[in-house]
Image (cartoon, rainbow, N blue to C red; front, side, top):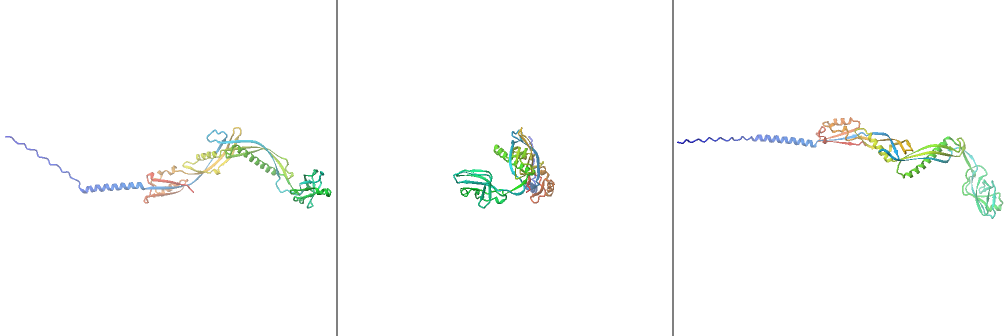
Length: 389
C-alpha cells in the first residue's frame, strides 16, 4: 500500500512595520526648519551690505625737470622748436628825465612870406617881422622872395620869454616902405614855440633807462619778424638780449634836453611747442605721484619755465621746468583693500581708514539696520571716493 507524502507547511510572510505618523511629522518639521534657516542665511547674505564713503585729503605734488627743445627732435621727450639769433644795431633820440631848470629863450616858428609885386624882394637876416599884437620877430636867415610868389622862412622872437609864443597871425615888415608893406607880408599857421627851455643834466641813470627801452623796442621788432616766419605755430617763446656795445652822443653831467643812444645787441629767440611742453610736464608729474595716489589735476597756469642754456650751432636749448598739481587716493590703494575691513564694526572701520594721512573723513552705512559689522563677502562692500571740494 502506497504511503502519501506530506506537503511542507507554507512559511508565513512577515508584514513590514510602518513608521508612525509622528515620525513623519518630526522629519517634515526638521526639513522645514532647515529650509527656513537656509533661506534666512541666503536672504541675509543677499541683503547685507556696507557702503563706505571716503573723503580723501588732496595732496600737492611738484616735479622739477630739464626740458630739451630742438629744431630736429631726437627723443620721445624732445620738444619741437625754432631758434633764431641776430646781431642788431639801432639808434634813437631820448629826452632827459627830471624837471631841470627852466630858463627864458626866444620863441620861434615858420612864417610864409608872400610877394604880390612883380619884383623879387631880398630880405637880409635879422629883418624885422611885426605881429598884429605888436610882438617883434626877426628873420633867422636871409632870403629872396620871388615876384608874385611866396617862400617859407624861420623867424625868432626879438626878446626872450613866453610872450613870444603867439598864436597864428599876420606879420608886417617894418623895414619896407608903406607901399611894399601892403604887397609883401608874412603869415603863420602854427603857434610860435620855445619861449622857454628846460636845462637838464644828463645822468648815468638816464642812459641806462634809455638803453633798456631801446632793447625792449628791438626785442619787440625781432619777435614780430620771427613770429611771422613760424606762422604762429610755436606758442612758447623766450627772447634773450645781450648788449655787445652801447654809446651816447652826450656825456653824463652835460646840460641838455635830448641825447642819442646807439646800441648793438645780440637778440636770440627760442620758440617751442607749448602744448607739447605741457604734455611732457604732465607725464613727468604723474611719474612723481606717491604710490597709492592718482594725479587729479595739473596747475599749468602756475608752471614755471626758465631758460637754462642754448646752443645755436646745434639748434638746441634747455629749460628748467617746475610743474605742480593735486594728487588724491585711488580706489586700488592698499589702504582701501576691502579685506582689511571684513568683520569690523563701523567705528572700527572708520578708525582704521582715518588713521591714513590721505583720508580726511569716512562715513559707513550698514544695512539692514540690525547689521553691526562689515560683511565677509567682498562684493557686498562698496567703497566710494569723494573728492574734497
